[in-house]
Length: 366
Ligand SMILES: Cc1ncc(COP(=O)(O)O)c(C=O)c1O
Image (cartoon, rainbow, N blue to C red; front, side, top):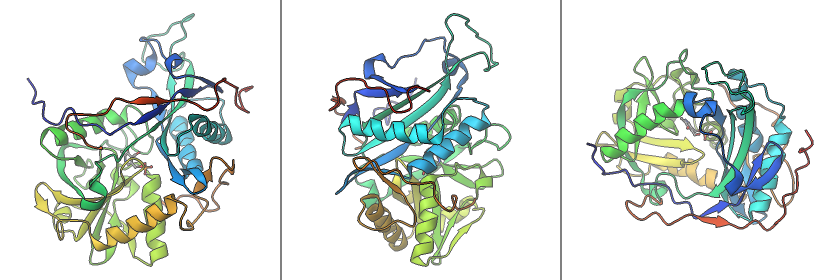
């Protein structure tokens, strides 16, 4: 019924942390399970985060941990998820998880969702009777849009699917349900031979990729759609804005027409998973020189130097896991606002935690 082309592609996952943080305790990977009648499975009631931890000379360092956890709390607030955790609880749990994983670099995935109270099951849409539960897992993750993508760029399409309307599902919350829309965009792109799809908003202006924000460079000015174009307030997006400011580049948040994509000098995606990935064509129309643009490369270089701890960041962006130094709350808030292997994805190996016993975290007593 469906073309199989593109279906086997996935990001390489060389190692997975064998412990998972669950409501204040570290449990074994194999014990991190839910009931099939959990509310989240039927009604999409989850919010989550995606955070990268980079290998640096000072050991693993989590990138913009507090900003991610602030967004996590905001997503939960929008969905009236009345939990007991603080930003420090989530930051401390993530740092401890990375430490226990023994991974030098990884992707951290906190998720808060409505589960099932087996003593008093509730199966309706009303989420309130269902208990909230939170997990944080981690794994080593390859280049989201392919190893070569960072240098050579990716071929993308404009999706026939629109991004969410602001008053249907809020794009500013990172909720599991939003990713059904992302899946439509991603599947269509892959099956048509593209690495990613760009969605327009409900008015027809450029919104974002299925899992990335987008930037357009024209006449030396860097532009990105405003949050009102139904985009996730990306942490990498904010990092790019701040890097542009440091580099003295003009950066503007403004509505972008679809046609402007085709005639841009440069285009690139930003995202925790995709990092900064140039776009070399849209709908088979070559962008600029058909490769990574000069401004994109400058921004990318600074971004990777910062994430590797080789260059000072505009703020306290790195949390060094081994030094247990937590990045303080940033003085200024966010600016406004595979290995793509077609066939052989190596089997995931589970990383052995250097700490064998499951010691409750500092906040486990909560
Ligand atoms: C839909 C969407 N937009 C944008 C982004 C980029 O956000 P961030 O840079 O915070 O990862 C992501 C990734 O999380 C995403 O899923």
